[in-house]
Figure 1 (cartoon, each protein chain N blue to C red):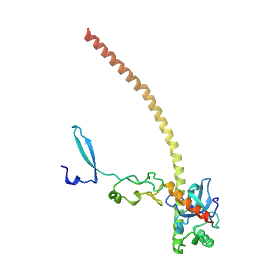
Figure 2 (spheres, helix red, strand yellow):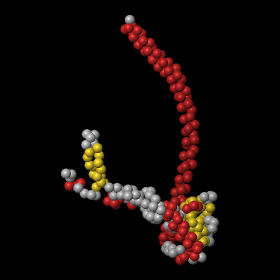
Figure 3 (cartoon, rainbow over the protein chains, first blue to last red):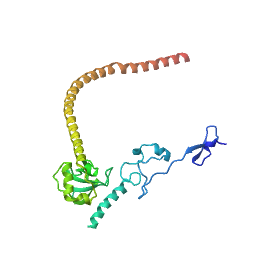
Length: 93
Length: 172
């Protein structure tokens, strides 16, 4: 039986073959999914793949790009948003 | 809409994206000088790529490279503060911002002066340096060619010959 500490489903189990030709279970932390743009679903740059508990320990500047909608939208979609907001003003006139 | 002096634009890239600014001067085909001013819209006085700007139908009457205070007054006269939903900063804040701009200008001037001195010094040094190493290199090259190559080649060949002689003697 494994240690009680390891008997949780929050850990990922990985089978490893040792040099002595024996299969052993290793317990690893699960990785979070890739952060994606909310509009175009492309993977985002500058957002680390760590557990939420680790994310809290990081400085705020390392959690997301430092621009409006950083960490939610990719830079292209963000630009389109602001471009469109200006064009809407023109159309109203 | 062209990016002429006094055109109000929205920045679309970087940390200042979504904020309004005014064109102060055309620097290049691709670049213009802009300012928020920072006290008003949090856009610094800086050089900016034309592709990162989206021109709006609004304009402000200013001269090229006007100071931030003048730009704020021009905003007020044109009545854009209410249209764009901006708050006019208090005069105390504007004064402090003006001091900061002056400080930056002073620092830039200070940096420029010592640079000129530094440029003069290295010009003299390399001339002296260039002469010395050339002489040394020539001497070194001469030494290597005279001594190193013959010693290595002779040594290897002699050793081979000695080994061959020994083997022949053993066989006999």
